[in-house]
Image (cartoon, rainbow, N blue to C red; front, side):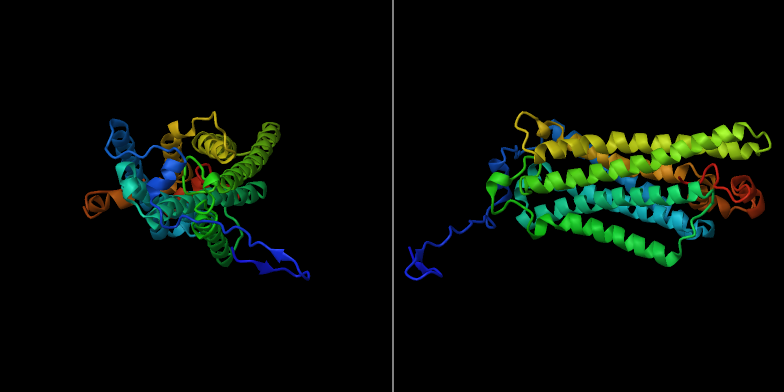
Length: 361
């Protein structure tokens, strides 16, 4: 052993033990270390999971492409809330692509992956799902502002919206790429997690807690909206001079808030709890038994987002029909009944500058 002189006279120090890293090992080495099963053949369960995953991914891609196309072609959607909805659809579209990439690189194919490809597979998922969650939070804050000021659209400038969208993706990329650039367990096998054998348990704990905090913040924002709406309805009941459309708007808002919170809670909480348990090193928790299912459930939220935030909007549905029935529109005998003139359509959606019944909340 080479002796190294220390700062004090006559002192001899032993060099600190070098940390050994396993950059040249295979994916199977880390799976064996974490005791995660790595199959070499396709089981019935694997085929069913992949088939279901690819089906969900395809639906997510198509629905969110439809949302993006509708926002682009319809000038009525050129407002901050719809730009955020378009970005949410882009994040969910990316999530669909990432999940589809996972389905093509899972099961027996996992053992054939290089460490770099494995990290790419996981980073795509982390980035896309994080972008989707942060988008939901941004929409919640925007809706909170417009509902409380009783406006149809936010006064946020397009420049601020673009900055916000940039920050959303920067945050998602940062959280998604952190493990690939150091927060892994390639140099500390005892820190490897069970669900993601190349990820450090501390990262899973951080990621799960971050997402749960975002959910809590969303719950607080929407709870405030819910309380405000209930109080507004109480005041409205004492004043019969209010237009019936205004009351429908309030009721529609309460329903939408309930759907949003319920869908987010059902789709995201199980996965985050499982990740947190794995990150905390729970030995008695069989997290691997439900891993694929909670991930699929989180991916389904990307489909629900398109339905809740877009399909409840009459104008959005009319635009969807325009896109899907392009051939019908070329027929001179076809007269679309869904798309009304500007005044008629907007007159039913806007009352004294208030938000609409079907406007995305």
